[in-house]
Length: 127
Image (cartoon, rainbow, N blue to C red):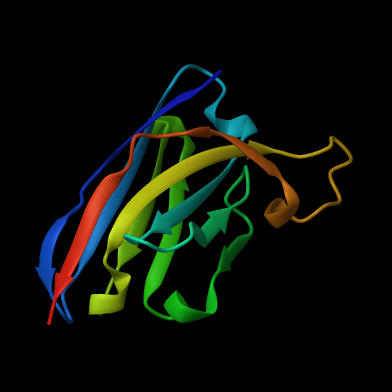
């Protein structure tokens, strides 16, 4: 299976930007959809954004729409989350995850099973 490592987190002031990277090892990166999730202290883990295997489809949770952009560069085995206009409520541990579907090719990637996870990277936004 592919292995994932996140990087790019840090401390930023409100209104600033960060770009997270999710680097994959192995030769099967392009066969997985990728999602970014986040979990704040004491809160549930929430989906942030997802991108399909080819990069042709993307999805965003309402709270980040218009501010975050998910992308991938399959030849570099890397997915990204560009985060602009950051807000204190974006503070969380961010994880990337790789998922697969049922093989029919017609289901939304939001229904995939995301079973492969990176170690996480902390994003802290100060007011």
